[in-house]
Every structure is written in structure tokens, then in C-alpha cells.
Amino acid sequence: MRVLFVAHVCAALLLAAAGFVKTAGTAFTLDGAPFRFAGTNNYYLSYQDSTMVEDVFSRARAHNFSVLRTWAFLDIGRPDGSASVGGGPKNGVWFQALDPVTNTLVYNESGLAHLDNVLAIAARYGVKLILTLTNNWVDFGGMDQYVRWEALANASYAAENPKHDDFYARPWQRTSYAAWVTRLATRTNSVTGVAYKDDPTIFSWELANEPRCQGSGAYGSSNNCTLNYAKFHVQPVAWKITSWVDFASAAIKAADPNHLVAVGDEGFLCETYQDDPDMTGDCYVGTDFAAFTALPTIDFGSAHLYPDSWGGGKGVEWGMEWIANHTAMAHALGKPMLLGEFGLKQGQAAAYAEWGAAWLAGGLNGDLFWMLCGRQDYDTPWYPDYDGSYVAPEGPRPAPNLTPPFFHPQASAFTARTHPSRRPPAGTPRLARR
Image 1 (cartoon, rainbow, N blue to C red):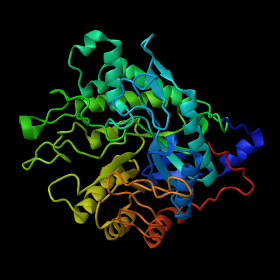
Image 2: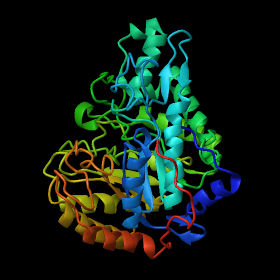
Image 3: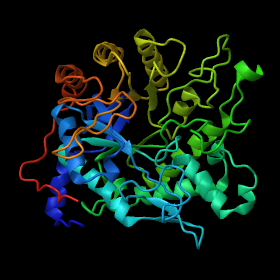
Image 4: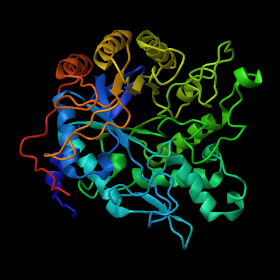
């Protein structure tokens, strides 16, 4: 059901969002004031009903989380769900698919209306959104779906043994990605009537979630995505993905000059000498945080942190050094630094408190933990913890809880001191449930 509002109601919905987030040297600014923040992630908002979306934003706002990162993609193979690499539609929702007759990409208006709804609800709660435009992993389609689409549309390409990292260099796939981001940036929200490029609810665009040379199984990787010192004993160069970042960020800037743009990478480095090879620095995955962040069309540095998943016995101390080093690198380039995801499967509360204090003192501009979830609806249990690092501030959980005392000090230190907390404006109508 599409909900229509008159102009003054649309304006009320956007009051909480205030102005566009900008950068001033190594700082984010909002309405002319410095803006540091603590926030979170949630990937399922665009395909769940409004009850679940409202629940997540109400919990985020209650804990002073002013920024939330979420997916702005849901790609399937064909409109009927066939040829999908990521499981097909979610609750019947999808955004892009390849038309089997014309072999061109088509966009699903009824699916995109769900994303419109997410933006409208976020604005009402005063939460800014980082919108991620594709995925390195097959979940929800992502890069491997672009590879599959071209293979479906081009039999000769399909016969060439397509690779995951073709996404970064093949003209058809680059053009299709640019068309998607342009379509989304210029889209008019069906709930608020505001074009995405003109909506201050959006904090920034993010090119991709965790781009790498390697995906998660639908396609292998080529042998020319990167040159790796530890393997080939030559100067490492993350040439292919850096070239794509340059292209993709320019495409977004052309469609939308109002919003910031970031990469969405994990912060992995491409260092010259690695006596003890380590994927976080030896260029194996083909990403180069320093090269990405230096590009003029990238507005701030972004990195992730999962020390217990990255091997080599990494722990809490390593995590503090990781972000201190990345903050220093981004600031040396004259840009702010965001920790776009971080997570642990055990010992979360103590580690996150220690990390938060160190990052605040060390000048990190913002952090977003993975991830805040809520109830599946008002009467059923919490959303399932699929990766062991979800967080629910209240209530029973199958995974370890982080209780409100952890959240409030860090969020308040990052957010309240530099920007006042915002609540939904009084009298703002609630969106109809879908």
C-alpha cells in the first residue's frame, strides 16, 4: 500500500534529519558544527515490514545512535527469481533483475518502495543512513550477480569462465553498476516526495560492502586482480579495485553532488614488505586503504574490524592499534575516519568499552558496530543471530547481550557533546504498516 502525504507532512518527516553531513578537513560537520557519532548497522531493513523497521530505529534512537549503515541493494537473476546467486527475493522484495527478453536490467518499483519507507522512518527518528550500493559477498546478489547477469546476456562471455573480479573491470558490469547508482540517487522517494540526492537523511553513499578480489563462492578469482609481494616477490599493486573505486565514486558524484562518498572496504593495506604474510596488509585481497582514501572523489576513510576472524591471534590490543593507525592515515590525507563495522563473537562488552574509550581519545570520527537487531514483530523472538555478533540492548538473546550501560557512555561521548540528540518531531504522523 502506498501512503501519500501532503507537502507539510513531508517537510515534518524531514525536520529531524537536519542538513547534509559535510567534511571540514579531518572532521565531519552537521549544520556547521563538528559531528562525531556512535552508530550501528542493520542489513534487513529494506525487505522487512514497518513494524520491524520501526523497532530497530526506536532502539537506535533510544541509545543515541545517530547513524545507521544499511544495504541499498537487493539483486536477483531474473524477475521470477531464477539465476540468482544470493537466494532470490527476500519476503518477495527485490530491486534489480535481468529481463529475459531484452537482456537489460529492470528495476522493481514495489521493491524500492520498501527502501523509500526506510528513509522516511529514519528521518522521523533523526537517524542518518549510510547506504551501501553492492556487496562483495553473494548475500543479496551483489557483485557476483552482475557477473551472472552479463553471462546470461552474453554467451561468449559465459564461455570465458567468468571471475568474481571481472566486476571491477568489465565495461558491461561497470556501466550496469553506474546505471544503478544513478537510478537510486535520482529516485524520488514515494513516501516523502524527496529525491534521494536531495535528502539529508542520507549521511553518505558507500560503493560496496567489503570489496575484495575474492568473493564467496559463486565465482573464483583471476590471477591478475593484484600483485602480491608475499606470493610473487614483487611490488604489490591493488590496481584493479583501485581503478574501479575511482570510476564508481566519480559516477556517484556525477549523479549526486550533495552527499559524501566512501568505499566500504575493510581497511586492508597493500604494503611492500611482508615477512610474515597477513591478509590485512599483504595485498592478497587486492585492496589498498591508503590508495582508496587518497582519491579526490572519496570523502573519508572507512575500515572494518574483526580481529577474531582475521587470523594470526589478533585481539583487543591489535584492534586499538588497527584503528589508531587508520585514523592517523586518513587524517594525514586531510580526511575524517569512520569505523564502518566492528564485531567480536566473545567478550563484546569489555572489549567494546575499551575500544570506544581509546577511539574517542584517539580522534576517530565515528564508529558503527555490527549489528543492532530487534524483534521480528512485536510478539515474537528477536531476529536470529546468524553470525554470532549481533547485539540487542534489551531482552533475551541466544547470543551474549550488551546491556544499556555499555551503549550510553560511548554514544553520548561521541554524539551528544557535538550534536544535540533529536527525537521525532511532535505531531509527526506514523507511517502505515505494510
